[in-house]
Length: 171
Image (tube, rainbow, N blue to C red; front, side, top):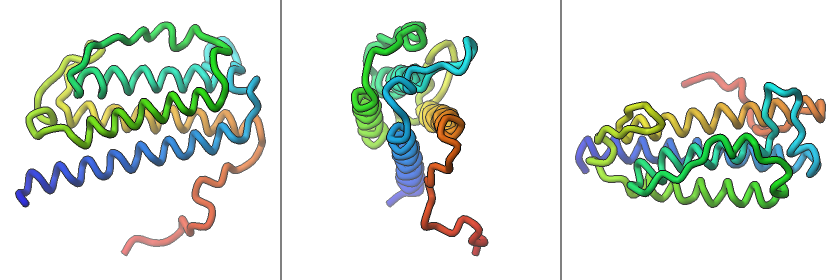
């Protein structure tokens, strides 16, 4: 296997792992709140968990499915933030999982050319690698916001890594 193939394999493996972790954490967070709380907004400058999930679906679709996957860009970003009470927790999670699964397949199947090719996305210019890094970072960022909001609502640790010793030192 060539050095380039090893790099691509490592990049893809880690990107898909991080995406799966964010999906797991959002699923665990949704299990802790009510249907009404999914659409609750803390104030006018913040988004509901439901809107954040719709936003994640839109962003992942625009960056990976459309740009990296070379499909038409049909995103309506403003709609992601203006919708309220449009779906249940189960429906939102299913939409997110389906979007992430589609994106993961595209990332997995991306050629070296697609990973290096520059693309214009949302007014920015990224290579395929840059697109993957953006999506992983953006997904993680909003996952943290969702977890924070749920912890604030429930005043409890969500136990994302319960059973693991996170104080283990590097070898």
